[in-house]
Structures are given as structure tokens and as C-alpha cells.
Figure 1 (spheres, protein in one colour):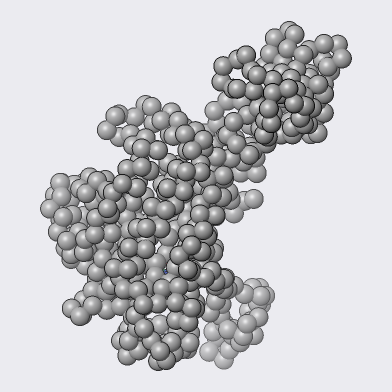
Figure 2 (figure 1 turned 30 degrees about the vertical axis):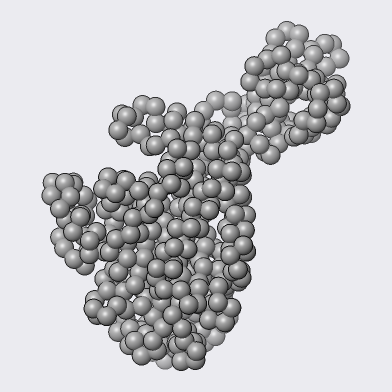
Length: 470
Ligand code: 4AD
Ligand code: MG
């Protein structure tokens, strides 16, 4: 919906957000999704137009021919003086669920087929698009090649076993072998398969030939986590770089995140300002100290900070001596070295202690995946997690184990079936080099960019336990 100058005759199409008016004139706010800003249609009410105007309600689709004029009203520079209005698709006000009033985010989740038509979700959708575009831009500008990694796999990249099985077997009549176990040799691929939890392992194969690659695809986790930060299906950005050590990996992660923030500030300001107002409004009843930082200010703030880099051991020391730990305010009290960090701990470090993003490195090997490079101490691995305000972990990554024997032993130790990993192991046999990578959860990043509080609201069609509508 572009205004091309005063006095011009134009045609606009879109959906009615609101209609109001007086006896003689109707004001219709029309939006086609290209911007947060509506165009105001001014239509004279006379015996000729009355019938059509009467049938126009919130949600209807219109095609309007009219004259672009300077708007005498405040709030918009131009408006469209209607010459002819066609109702392309009416919306019955008694049935249309989205009324021109505030709806709760929970209500809108149940109307995900229509929520694109709200200001909030059209803004999020546009920011999401800009971020996808920016991700590809960033990597293209930095000499990375995009690779498509498989969605159906026969391996478990994270070794956590939280996978959705993929099968064409008849579930009411599953073939069994003589031991009474499911006979997957009869299945479509002749073996057990699942939806991928990460494209990393395949990305590593490509990095060990093309040097710098990335994959950006859907990943699936069958963990039964009903939190505001977990999805069963989410999108992950996974760069993988040969000849990078963990320090290079952290530098890239920080640089990429800052690029994405800068891109949003440069290209999505109208939507960010709208989302900022939405957040202020949502939090207006909260106490001052419980309110989030204003959205645009928060984005600028993170852009200006050097991320704090600390080891896991230091993080545990800080947490153990923290007030909430001593007063047992954490849900999971930190007893000592070896504990896994929960998002409450991550957020304490970021929001209360350092007051900026934090990168934690060198975690205990027992709480991390098999592929991470082992440190000399025999206890820790070269992992790095990036923690963000409001989110906690936004990136998980590491330098990869490039030593064949160490990797092989770790796979054995962790009871990972060797036959599902032979190809991965083989890259450590031939021309193995130090390499590193990470995974950025795209929806976690979207939470940060938009100030939304629930991950179900930054993906068009969320998949969570017991929820696969639309
Ligand atoms: O830490 P994760 O599990 O790491 C990996 O999968 C590695 N293979 C990545 C790599 O090194 N190439 O997941 C990476 C990120 C997390 O930091 C988080 O942002 C996001 O993915 N994530 C989720 N986002 C939404 N819902 C979930 N259930 C998520 N699980 C992880
Ligand atoms: Mg992780």
C-alpha cells in the first residue's frame, strides 16, 4: 500500500481493521500486511454508497479506487478519498472472531489461522522475515556456503534420545523379529529413522571440505517441555567452520548476533516501535523493577556490550555464592561443580550479575554432547553457550573433537551405536582438522528481537506437547 503522491488516483486492496464515522462520512482503516501503518479510506455516505458501506466491517477484504490527498486529521500524512469500493470478501461481524479491541495472546493462539491479521502478528511476521533474510546475508557476505541437511536421519546428533520416530510400518501390525523386537529392516528405509534434532553432524562433513558452511532448517525435539522457551519443532541456524577454535567460534557468534540486531534496527524500526509499545502496555501494571528494558533501548544496549566470557567453573562459583542460591530462592539450588545450569541460573548471571550477555565455556563433559572437544583436564569440554537477557541460552556450540581415538572412545563410553556414526568417525581418519560450530535457536532469537514473552507467539504455527492444530 504505497502512497505515490498527492492528487494521484490509485487502487488499494487490503483488510479492514476498523470502520468508524459520522452521518456523512465513513473512515475505514485498511491494511494489506506490508506495513504496521494502515491507510485511512475516507468515504462519503450518500444514497449511492450507503448500501456498500453498511456491509463493511472489521475483517472484510476491500478493493478501493480513490484519490490520494493530504490528511487533515492527525496520525497520518495521507488518506484516500474513495471513488469506488468493492467488497472482495465480506466478514460477518457476528461471526468474525477478531473484533477491533485487544485480544489476549492466548486467545489469538487458538485463532492462529487469523492472527496474522492483527498488528502484533503481522509485525512479528515481518521481523521474522527480515531476520531470515539477514541470516543468509550475513553468511553469504562472510564466505559461508548454505547446505541443506537431512530432516529424516538414522542418527541422534545430540545423543539425548528425544526424537520423533519416522516410520511407514503399520502400527496396528508391527513386524517383529524372533526376539520379539520391532523389525525395522521391514521399514521404509530398512532401519529405524527419526526426525533430526540438529543438522550439525552433516554440516561438519561439509565444513571438512568447504571450510565454512551453515544450515538453517527445522529441527525436532520430543522433549515434554511445556515452557515459554521450548518448541517441539523449531528452526536452527548452524554454522560449522574448519580451522576455527572455540575462541573463533565465540567471536563469530557474537558478531553474527550483533549483525542481526543491527539489521533489525536498520530495517524494522516501524515494527519494533509498535512491538515496544505493545510490551510497555503489557507491563504497565508491573512494578518498575519487574519491567523489561524498553525494546529498542535493549537492542541498542546489547549491541554496545562486549559479551562477558567466563568458564563454567567461574559461573558455578558466582552462583554458589549468590543471594538466591544461599536463600534457596532458585528452584534448583546449585550444590556444586557438575550441576547443569537451568535458565533461572543463566538469567541470574546475565540480568543480575554481569548485566550483559554472557558466554560460558568449558562445561563438564558429562552434561554435554559426545562430539565436543575434550580439554586436557579430562573433566571438561570446549563447549560454549551464549546466554541472553530474558531468554537464557540462545546459542549452544563447541569446538568439535577432531581426534579419532578420543571421539571413538567417547562414543563407546556413551553407548552410542557405532554403526550409526561410522561416517562421522571417518572424517577424523582422513584429513581431520580443528573445527567448531554452534546452533542459534531462531525462535529464541525472535523472542529477544520482538520482546514477546512466549515462544508460541514468534512462530506462525507452534508445535508443543498436545498441540498440533493448524
Ligand atoms: O544446545 P542445542 O541442543 O545444540 C545443538 O543442537 C547443537 N547441535 C548446535 C550446534 O553446535 N550446531 O540447541 C541449540 C540452540 C539452543 O541454544 C536454543 O537456542 C535452541 O537451539 N533450542 C530450542 N529452541 C526452541 N525449542 C527447543 N526445544 C529448543 N532446544 C534448543
Ligand atoms: Mg544447549
